[in-house]
Length: 579
Image 1 (cartoon, rainbow, N blue to C red):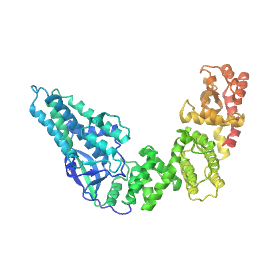
Image 2 (cartoon, rainbow, N blue to C red):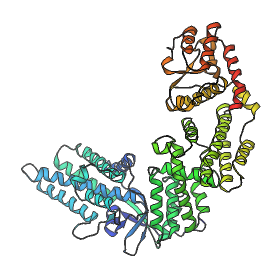
Image 3 (cartoon, one colour):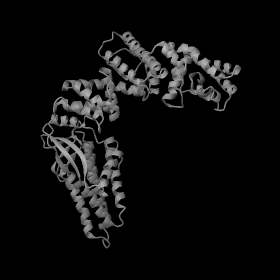
Image 4 (cartoon, rainbow, N blue to C red):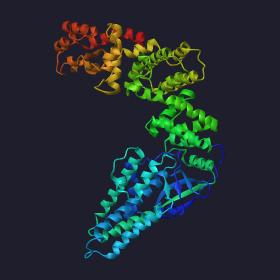
């Protein structure tokens, strides 16, 4: 932070006392409940240590709050823990009442009536902690405002509704709450079944309840102002050990907006992140890509610091959010260019979509900032296609053929994008010149590396598509194949399969050299045991002129290491022409 943060003296609370002494609300700008199976499992394992006597207490973490004008504690950090705690208490109560109904409403000859009172006492104590009935305010409100459907569901779930537990729910936060409820109920039931009689089971349930409310503790920092609460949150979490950079960045942006603009900003953030499935990982990657497009490439660990150093007031935060909103649709298209259908129709120029799809199949992402910068500056699709073609050339030479590392390429693409964003290039030709000078490997280095290039290939994934792309481009240029459209045949319809011309031991390591690979219509692919003449027969049936020429060669001469080298050297002259 720019200045020293004076953190108020934290207060230590046991779970029971925390809820007894405070009313908590989750502000609209906070994320919804997101704990999954792993987090609930960790929660239970921590409690189980106490149940098994491994430890006497457990520190459940910190919460940061701000007391608003209604004397409610707005949760800035810690709502996942508090929501889980409330659900867990409700599970204990519901199990207690189910046991009471089963064992104390019929015959009581074989049970201790005092045990029934113990179960009812657990239920009353939990209700007192959770509150919310008979006019009392609930101890935790997870949603406010006109659309409070999540709060209604949370209230029902934590106040004994069978429908809330069992009926199908649609929203992710509701699913997470319902799943957490059932996971924790199962954990408790499994623990109770280890006891041989109802009396011991009730004692065990009492123990679970008391250990949780009395031996789980938190520290709460209640800040004097909303701004201070955000600042404390950032200070405590900026190292990002538990949170993704996007979570801390969101907090920073909201802290700058002020009470008058925070709801509008939060709505914009929700619209942006909904397009990324509210995944913290995807949101972080998106912001990092955007940052690389406008400023420079930074690591995920340094992303929050970079943003907070540049975005320092409400106007800058608003502009930042608007830029994210303008870029997010394109980013999702770059991630998945042809699915769903709307992505395939994002660009009017089909050539752009096809090129992006090929890059995506090869798992190439480093170029995203350049396309985002061009989109931001309203370049025409014709210009974007020119630049994407140059990106393809740069990547194929640098990474696929010469096999240099990605750091230089990632940094270089970001620098090009920054220059586009800041209007330092006078048009598309200047962009291409910049990429040629900064990033394009020389013809000599590319040809030398290609002459000994080998690829593993495969039936799926980036390795397959990279080799398929290399061969299809080489066939298109050298043999004039795919004159009616390479993309539709090779990539869209996936009509072809990679085939090694020889897998004989005599060719050894040259089995994976480019000169020993071809692409063949799937219905013509021979068995792995096919000899040269059988291979030649199948290749001769191919519509590709390159395969027909190869068939003639196999019919007249043996396929040797020298033949592989010769074929690969024939392609060398085409490489720098294509890329």
